[in-house]
Length: 86
Length: 185
Image (cartoon, each protein chain N blue to C red):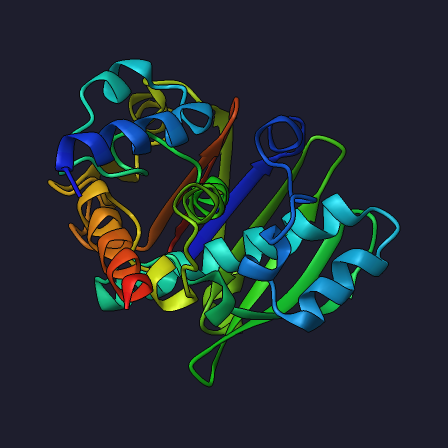
């Protein structure tokens, strides 16, 4: 998966859950959903559900627990997409 | 360690659609879901349990230094609830955290601690959420100085003794709650 392409898709998904549009413009793999984008933790579930729909994958609770930033989210989606290929 | 969490009900209503398919099951255990769905005001019960989980998470996060988003691992039970107060337990890995909550038409606010003693020692400071709240708190009393460390964790130091005291800050919408304790860390 292309990194920039993934970040663009993720940016689209998180847009409704952040009020910090300046931070959103600067989103990169080191962006933290809570610290940088000021996303409310109750909306982290929405991001997980949106990603499941978008990529046609299932994200288990253990994976969800790590999805606090762009980098770890990308790693988990990649892993799920790979295991779906088999 | 102490924790606290406040939810502005009006903001939560616009921010979160908990009726969305799959949402409840990702955050709440079957028995918590039952408490929510059987309550006359399901949203209120949902945010009550949510603030319990969040305030307990803040304690665990301070103790372990680990950040994670695993609301299902924080198993809540409600001991008492009426229209303005609630008390409950949050079980995490076999150990209980105690919580006490305040309910109003505008917000739900929970505080949590490991022991009754620590819970009773919590002092609360409610204010409006704005960038200058730290200065406002520091100017409002002389005993404590509130700062944030390099990673953004709030720290409260007693001005005379130099001791650090437990502190937890929560804000949501226009609401801000600072919980702190007179007994040092």
